[in-house]
Length: 255
Image (cartoon, rainbow, N blue to C red):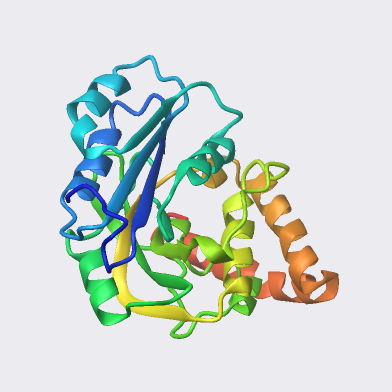
């Protein structure tokens, strides 16, 4: 990965990592970004004021990090908004502490095959705290994604979408657990060109914010769905969502 250049003919991708006390998980996240073969990356790290040795890791890679903020914030989505505010790339990709880009050639592959789109998406591998693979995400991405597919839940992981700055807005801080669902849904609705990369884009650390707060997270998501799809439509679609969710837990002993 080399320092980005605005004169480059390829689009600049701003990769944003949010971290707070991530001494156990941050290094593999940064490593996965540093190893990218793509030439036009702006790497941004937003730290919530860590006090556990996270800064030592950040210092180790400071030549690879173009922008860095360390200060208290009002939670994950507030920190992600800070990253968006200082990003100057044409595309945004959120790879937070513990998550990883799945392969070092992903951005090179995407932008050589599909030079211009509003949103790129792919699949996600779930990992444990040691970085071991648990398996593919429960919901697999549809062949041709539309914003309407989010009636069935978050069918594409937030870490596996690369979004043009032209189609996104700030995370809505009124949502404490599901602002990422609304953010991706909004971007999809604004997008004219949505590309299925047919690649696994990210490795996602199991047990994120929504999973730890599953009931309030689901309640928020229901409210967002109602806003976008209407109450009746949302209610009808929740029966198969609940059935598949319970079925998956029974079969794989995870969710």
